[in-house]
View 1: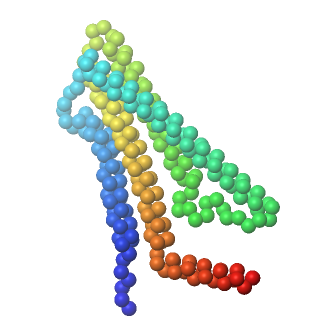
View 2: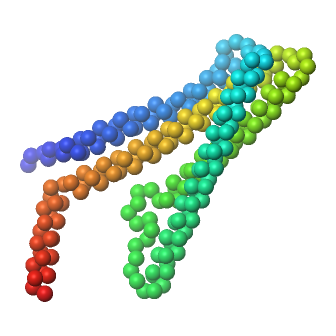
View 3: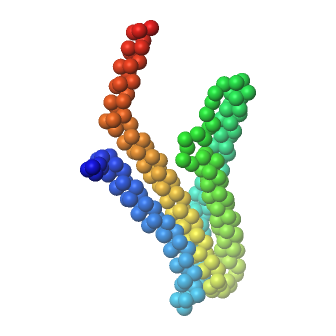
Length: 222
């Protein structure tokens, strides 16, 4: 028996998945590098940062911008997760209502590779991460503002390092959110591409033609 040749759509689907996974791995490593790089510089590089009015202004502006984005992202994630759970609750209530009436119905999660509750839980968890980062940034804004208001303030090396680390954590969370959204879009796109590949199978088209001819004959006999 000869080997079955790969369909062009199947080859394209494999290439799409390989590229998406490689890109996701790179994006997954970037937030970790941004978070751990300042820690390495603090404990092993021997370098020393000092606070200054210019650095305080730049750090406060960066933290305020990230904090604004974090509050918006936190609201969108938690509200979308709640809406998804409400939708799923309505689907299950409708499903149970059909069963009580004696009708046949399929469960809401029938045929789904990933239940809607899992996706909603992921969004809620990432929203909580943004909440923690936002609290950290708020505390750092208070500390930096207090340092700037103190007369004859010192170098405060610990505050300079902590401010830099807070900014890195915020940027890493931004990159992580972008990576998760990109990975989700690639996953959904791969599933749609796979569905199109199955629907465009010549054997499936021939089967549909046979079923159509059989159905037309039956309608004519009736």
